[in-house]
Length: 369
Ligand SMILES: Cc1ncc(COP(=O)(O)O)c(C=O)c1O
Image (cartoon, rainbow, N blue to C red):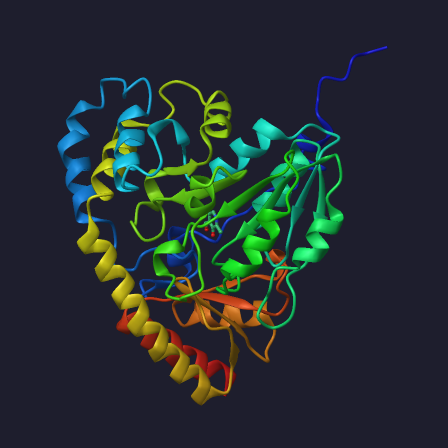
């Protein structure tokens, strides 16, 4: 009998892939030169950290050389960035948050294992887990605040459970899980279960009852923090992010990385970006002002939305989500329906600067009224 070498999941007929938001280039072609505001991928409207850009310019003539063989310089920098509370061996680096999620799942999941997610959630957790043959258990967030169903999650854990995913702040809703809910979950986790705490939007959080993953990691808990340079640092095009955990977990995951994986430009940009406090402050201040402006306008329009702890606001318009997406495109505004993230009828819109936000709200008004 012929030996079948192909994995069922990777065959074109059965492959379920994470398809990110539309690219600007494809859409721009449709619009014949009309101004286009891309508010669909939660990028930084201010562009990239100037310190990171300078590092890229300084390095661009070194591209004939291999990058550092390891990512140790960035891990050292991260240790300093976290005031020495985490050491360099508690970090692992990869090509952005999406790759980190894949890496973590690859490191821990076998076909018989299970992960727990709480929809609405970032889709790759489930998609990649299926790729590694694991079973995905969904314990949805609860009510209008999208609270974590801590008791439901704890009750679903069995010997095959390996990873639990929380997104904090949540993508796509922008809501956050307060510290007391996370404390309760983490304090009751059995030793064989790791909490993957995706905090790629943490810079934007202003809620007083929020908590970072490193608070738990410092206490030696089985928690992995997932971070990205794509969002507040404005480096989405370079593809770089980092995770941190206990030294045991971080060193184990790092074994799955390949040498020279982080390219020179990304490495230098990330190291420089960590010093760019001014850019982060400017980014966060703009977001804070603009979210209030957008809330007021959405209130005036009578459109349902969720207050955000991130750099986007998710709305639930009365008209169909995809209809809204298409109508907005015709007005030069890219937005993201998030039904596939477990939020049917909802549309996620990145917070831009005043020009972008005014254009968005003007188009929204025209379409819904
Ligand atoms: C919740 C969440 N996690 C992770 C990522 C991955 O970001 P990146 O792969 O660009 O670092 C994103 C990107 O949108 C996200 O929203």
